Length: 462
RNA sequence: UCCCUGAUAGCUCAAUUGGUAGAGCGAGCGGCUGUUAACCGCUAGGUUCCUGGUUCGAGUCCAGGUCGGGGAGCCA
Image (cartoon, rainbow, N blue to C red; front, side, top):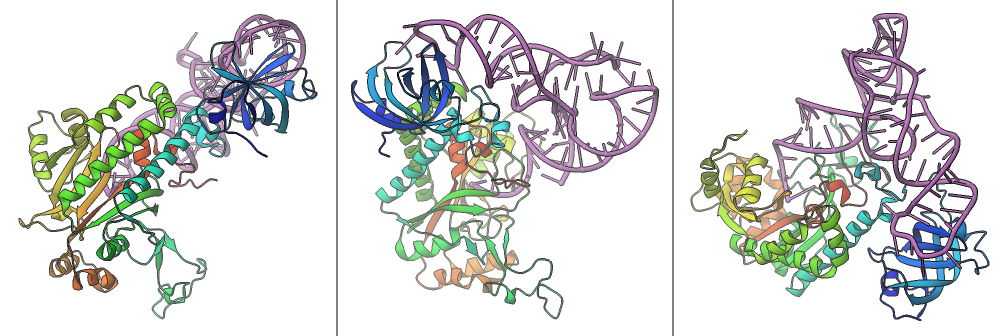
């Protein structure tokens, strides 16, 4: 089957002969002919096909088409005599590939709620909104690779199954082939993982960072872009149990380099989708968030606000409002604090740096003051934390001391410590939650609507 | 996990102090020679989430559960 994409048909000159495939969105029947609105996923717009009774299957098939039917059409592009579209296709044949019982087809030609469409995740990409999400998501993924590869970063693949725990990143899903009802036991009665597939206990990764650091400490600048898994019982519009994370790691670099990279990265991605997904972005701007295009354009032009955690605490203390959670140096910032800074005070992305060491992970580089670490969070309006990163502790003795303080077993991290033992180098990196990026770009309020098949507590359908 | 809130037709919702469950959209049928999630007419469509309780009588009140949504925590 040789076919043209509808986005190309819509741009074709009148009298071009075309063949195309698509799914019927709506049908408007008149006496003797029908207008078919077809979509094939290649663009937001539908193609209007005019089919009349001169087709030999008109009365038997074409006149009975309904939403969701699949068709393969041959015909000619003609200038449309009516308003609503520049061109349309006059069909010389309409092959009906698949019918869709209109009484049962879930995607009716009407407005549906996001909640309902989540129960129809296998069909929801046939709607305007979820088609647009899929295209923007794909464009963002492509732009991410483009950004890094153009800057000489190496794309590395880190393992999905891991024995290491990127300490503090969250609860992990266990990976095992043992019979859960009757696992082998040690003499002490514990599960004997030496009999398991990998002869040790393993998990789904919560982050590729530690493995990414090994690559950065030999190859230079690298990035990973893969799935990560958190077994947290998080029930929010911003959390998934399975999500995709982008994690660059840069060598011979400090936190300032890291923050600059994060800012350049986000601006590049926003500019890319504004440029490449105009119709889809216009759709989101009209139906989801009327400030979306203006917000993204402003972010591309503005400088992100940088401030230290210590300064942020000072600003919050004199904000002149009462906080549900009091602000004190040493306590992590709450959602209400972050929202105030990025949505009310600065009204643009904010990069907060130099957090208290006590509330951050062991691998973050200890500052000379001894009480903060070179960590950063990038906060954006509505989403909150979209990026978390840090300069990594490259000094073996300090790293070992911090691991001991957090009661970590250094033997499990022998290879991670080797990076500091042999040719250590200052390096830094960050993690970007890909779905949170798609949320911010599309304006969609719930993270379950920006990934095809969301995995959340008690939900792994499809 | 905690707090709040909801579940009624395929979908989105209504139903007064507890008293025969309705509408819009969608669907089916018919009409219309250019429509734009068209328009006009007619028709069908219900285990009111589940289990138990109170009551002459429960969509409505009570208890427990399941699932959805919002907020918080955890984080990306």
